[in-house]
Each structure stands twice: as structure tokens, then as C-alpha cells.
Length: 570
Image (tube, rainbow, N blue to C red; front, side, top):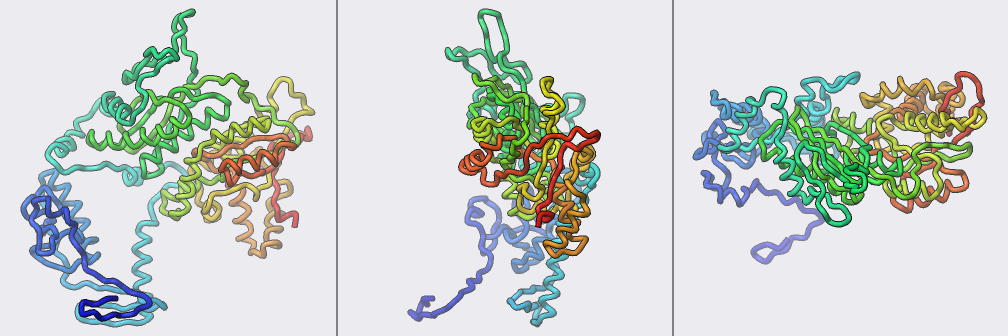
């Protein structure tokens, strides 16, 4: 460190400690500022020269009761700040904030030791570290123990917690907010088409569809139908068919990413049938807010969706918007058939290998995230997976002669495999000797980071119980659950309860609903290894062979999905 007097101090590590600094832009606001540049506020946390401006925490100087910059004051200003903003909007009585005179600081210094400072007193020791740890853990637990109803959707209180709106405290938006309660009747929740049209144009969407000659043949007209094709020889016809319809409540806080994920999910349903997406309509339910906030949210949703649709050469041409208690989004995708014949009717063959392209577990992770039980890195990897397009995977599966392709969706892996099996077995040309079933290697199924750990803790999606009731009767272990548990105890040297939890967690993953999940395909044995290498080369790094197609025995009551456990082979 170079000193002003020319001296030099050598060091191994340096702790650079400063006090709080005011943001430079405060000087441009016209608000009263203190000597250090912070916003001066009254006991009601309002600016001393503009009562429409509230400030709290480190950015504010409390003129009537000056205090050092410390988190304890910022935290305790929260309740009066929330009360006073509402009081300002409703023209009611304000609450005065009176800060405490002294406050405690506990600083961890490593080695499970800490220093306590309170007023003019200083002390330290291991006891201080334990005290700090207890306080910190109690604080964090406030945000982890969120009320949640496992058997149904979130409670009313929790739904209110998830709902959000953005408030601008200005004259225009204040009047706007006070007018929200006037929206009533069957059309009270509808948002005018001009907002969606403005957003579509602002996001550079194709609001007008052109045919090959460049002639305009249809445009967005709010809730009016759109003419997609004109066949002069036979009058007006619609060549494309509506194929994919989906609607989801928001499960991520970023509207842009949410728009990308839902669009990706909608496109996957098109890809697995070998169809080409042509146009899409958006259906958005926006939380109640002012028009500028609604437009901002819708712009982010549309921008995210457009990124996915443009990659698929699909035009977002219009749609419908409404208001509701929380954000929700869906798409209506129109498709056409490509020149080559799509795989629309599964016909799995004995010996085919079952390949999945993505890890499963999004349902569990999203459920855990709602309860503040999912780690940030787990959610990051889940979102990356949900944003990954399945377009290239469908092309590769067809190149390697896949006999059946399906998306892994809300029905879970078991439900989607059952759909493939039953579609194959129900074909008229299939005789009893050619009927098939699936054999899975349970612990070869790739899982998203954190999903298995959460499943072991019993955290499952609310949809899980429905999937299990619907599909578990067709699923069975090759031996028995008890033999699987015994093998796990022996091989992994686990206690009985831990072994059982591990086995059942893997089993429960079969019924986990997936959002924007991967694909499951049956590929002829001679092409399976090459197909797997090609998928991984295209970026589907977690692609795995998870089982094979086997013949049925013809016995009454035979299960359609059999699963094995690697530990039993050791």
C-alpha cells in the first residue's frame, strides 16, 4: 500500500473498509440531501421536501434521529415504510418510525469465533459465534418455511404471496392504481388489443403474414381470426392446422425466461409429430397493474417467446391478453406437414433401445423452489435444461430410424413411455405375438442436479400423485422393492431407512411432471449407439440409453413397464 508520505506497507491480504456512499444521481433529483449526499427523510420516511418520495435504509438520512448506516435500521423500517406507502395512496394516517438508540454488531472472525459490539462494550469468544449462528439461522428459516398445501394448489395466502404488481408513485400512476378497483363485470379482466398489438410491433414481431408472392393476406386484429392461406382454385382454405395448445402459470420470476420456456414447450409438441410450426398465437394472463407495467411484462414475455419462435421459423402473429391473480402464459401453434412423412403413429419394435435427451426432475425442482427449498445452482441448471430446444434431437432421431418419439411432459417419463407402448400395441396390424413392453434401468435415468436429493426428502410436485395413481398400476420392479432395498443396503452400506428412501426416490422420479422436458425415443439396436453419440455431439450431453423394448409374455395382468436396479446385479 502506498502512503501519502511515500511510505510503503507490504501485506498478504487487505480488508478495505469504508462507510456507505451516496449515489451520485441523488444530486439531480432536487430532493433535500444531507452533508454526505443522502436523502433526508422525516420520521414517516418521506423526503423532507417531497412527500411523494419515500426513502429508507442506507440511502436515507433520518433528520430527527440520526443513526449510523446499519442493516438493523433498514430492516425495521420495512413495516412502517409499507404502511406509509399504503396510507399515502389511501389518504390515511401515517406511522412514525422511531429507531432504537443502540444496536448490536456481531462479526465472525473465523475459527468459530466472533466479536460482539454493543454500545460502548466489546466482547468475543466461541459463545459469540454460536449466538451469531443461531440468529442467522432463525432469520433464514423465516424465508424457508413457507406455507404450502402438498395435496392441492397453493393456498389463497400463498397465491397472494406469489402475485405481484409494480407501482409507480406518480400522479398519473396513482390515479391509475386507484382506478383498478373499478374494473368489474365479465370484461373487467380483459386487456385491450391495442396493448398487445403495440408490444408485438415493438418486439419486431410479424404482425402481417405474407404468402410467397408477398401479398398481404392476413393481419392481427385483436380477437379476430387470421387468414393464413388463400387457395384461388377452391376459395378460402386454411392449409395449416392448429396442433399445440398449452397454458402455464408462472414458475420463474423472469418473464423473459418464462416466455422462452413456454414457447419451447409448445414447439416440442410440434417437433415430436414431425410437423413444421408456422404461426403462433399468444395467450397471456397478466397480474393486475397499471398499463405501463402490464406492457413491460408483456414485452418481456413476447421478446422471450420470439427468440424461440424465430429459431423455429415460426411467426408470432397475435393472440389474447387478460388480467388475473398471477402471471400465466400459453401458445396456440399452427403447423403444417413437411414433404417427408412424419412419425405420427408409434410402432416400437422388440430390441429397440430407449433413449432420453435430457435429465428429468423439473417438477420436483419447481415445487421445491416454491417452498424455498431449492438451491440457486439447482434452479439455474433446471432453467438451462428447460431452455434447450428439442428441434435438433427430433431430426437426429429420424435420421437414425427411430420407431417412436414422444416428449417427456406433464405425464412424467412413465406416462409418456406408456403412451408410446399402448399406441404401438393398438395398431390394427399388430398381432399378440408382436406386442411390446418396456424394460428400464432405473438408476441409468439422468436426473437434474438436486432433484434426487429433494425426492429423498419427500418433496414432490402436486401433479406427482395424479401421475402415480394413473400410471403406477402398469409399472413394476423386475424383482421386488424389498430385494432392491436389500441390494442397496449391501452394496452401498446404507441403513434400511436410507436405502428405502433412495430406491423410492428413484421410483418417484418416473412420475415427475416435466416442463419443456426432453424427448424419449425408441431407436433400433443397431443405430442406438451412433444416435447417442450424435445427440451428445449436438449438445444433449445428458442423453442416455435408459432401457429397451421387450416382448410381452401374453400373461393376463402383465405390466407394461418393468424396471431394474443396478445394485441387484452386484
